[in-house]
Image (cartoon, rainbow, N blue to C red):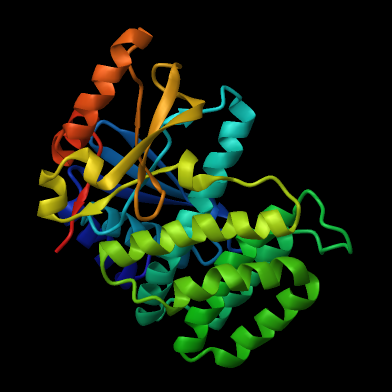
Length: 323
């Protein structure tokens, strides 16, 4: 690790309630894939492991910056409290939502890494090689890989936009041109998704959350136009709320509407109800009502009158206090 990554690791360890360690493997295939980084924990230790040493400092740095953002309580987190009782479908939806959320955070982490001098021509070339290794070129018709091309192109759009801000404009334009030629439909769709992210000032929790909600909704709009099934992440994914003291102390009915879901509560396996924000229609909590239908009217009456803070604490869900 370079001294800059060692300093970043020290910063993380100053906040983490335990010890964060890093391990890099000996493979080197000349492609950079940020999703190769894996986290595993044992007791109070967290291991960040990167199996391939190609541009390992960038991969590790990205993982550490996002971890630091999480530890500092800046970034709204995503949770998965619903299930379709279909393991394959659930895994696919979790993967899609995680990638969308991560691309928003990359607008922050890539910029920080560029400031540290880690976004280099070598890193950019390895990143592009990783894209071309992951994706097949587009055919005329929309195929099964279309959605994942969009997700990859979304992240690439954030990457090249960051390059342009940090002295790599010509190479970024070359990468954009290559991707537009090889993956034209996915590139166009991803640009529409990326523009609100890269143009936003992601310096506070509220703006980050808005960007995540927007990208969740934007992907579904694109999929509808392509006549593909929607992801519906706004209902499937629970996103940390960003609330003021007044909102936290007010009743649930002021901020949320509780809807019956077609999905089950992941923990109880019972039919779930989802608390959607009145303003953005984003899933903020999942709750399972009493099994006896006769008990439900009173349950929901009390739920709507409950202070928001008390409900979130009962559900053990984090929230971010808006400053």
